[in-house]
Amino acid sequence: MDSADEARRRALGRPSAPPQSGPKAEEIAEPRAFGERSHGAAAAPEDLLLTCRRAVENAEASPGPDLFRLHLDRLVAEAFDPGDRAKLTDIQNLADEGLFLADEGRADAAASRFLAANRIVETGGMGSDARTLAEALLWAREAGSEACAGRFEWGVEMLETAIDSDLLCEHAGLEIMLIHRVRIAGERMRIERRRGRLGDALLLGAGLLHYLERPTEPPGAGLGPAWRIGWRDHRGVIEPALVSEAHRQIAEQQVNFLGELEARGATEAVLQLRRFVPVQPSQAQRWTLFQVTRLEGDDERLNEAARAVMAPGPHPSAPLWRSVAAGMLAGSTR
Image 1 (cartoon, rainbow, N blue to C red):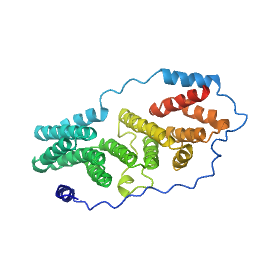
Image 2: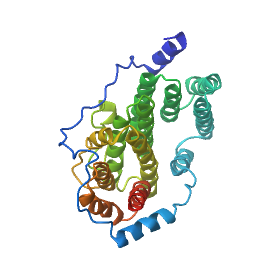
Image 3: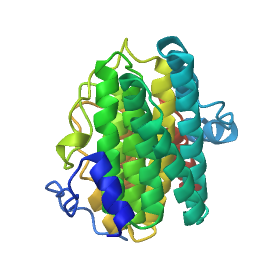
Image 4: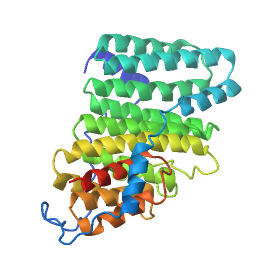
C-alpha cells in the first residue's frame, strides 16, 4: 500500500480490514428441475393482468429533490453555528464532486477533491459534533471512490468507519443519520456487485427493505457487527417520507441486481434468493417469493405469488411492485 493510503489509515485509526467472505447460504430445499414447467397451469386471470398493466402504464413520477439532504440541511441549520454549517456544505460538495469524478474514471481529480475535503475536517476547527457528522458524510462518499478504483476492502472499511460516526451522531440526537446508515448499506451493496458477489448484495438489499417495513427485524445477516448493531425501531422517529425514499432507492438496486444475477442462470439466482428467510411478511419477502416461483417455473403458484405482491399496492415503494407487474405481462405474451 502506498504512503498516502497508510497515512489515511492512521487518520481513521482503524487496522487493515481482513479479507471478507460472503455469508453462508441457508439450507435450501431441492428446487424444481429448471426447464420443467408445471403441467396444467392456469393462465393469469384477467383482473390480475389488468392490475399489472395499470402498474406499468402509470409510471412513477421522477424522483424529486433528495429528501434526506433537505432534512439534514434543515437540522444542520438549527444545530450548528454559521462557520460549521459553511464547512459542512463545502465538505459535502467536495465529496459529491469527488465521487462523480471517480465514477467517470478521473481518479486524480477525484483524489484532489477528497484531499481538500479531508483537509477541512482536519484543520477547519470544527466543533466535535459537526466534525463527527462531516466524517460520516465524507467517508461514505470516499468509500465509493475507493470501490471505483477496485480497492474494495478499503472501501468497506471506510464505510464501517462512517457507520461508527453515524451512530455517534444518532446518540447525540441527530436521528436522521439512521437513514444515512441505510444509504451506506446501499453503497455496500454496490461494492459487493462490483466484486462479483451479487448474491451477497441481494441478501443485504432484501434485509434492508424488510427492515424499513418491519423495523423489529434488523438487516445485515452474515455480515460483521458494524452492519448488524444499532438498528432500532424507526417508527415515530424518522419521517415516513424519508423511509419511503430510502426503500425506493434500495428497491431499484434490488431489481437491477437480480436482473444481472439472472443473466448468469436461473439456478444461481434461486439459490441466492432463498437465503433471505425473514420472520414476518413484507413487500420484500413477497417479491422474493414471487421471483423464486417465477425462476423455478412453478406456473401453478405463480399467479398466487404475483397477486400477493400486487394486491397491497406500491407500498412502501413502487420498484418491486412494478417489476412483478412487468414480469407477469412479459410471461402472458409468450
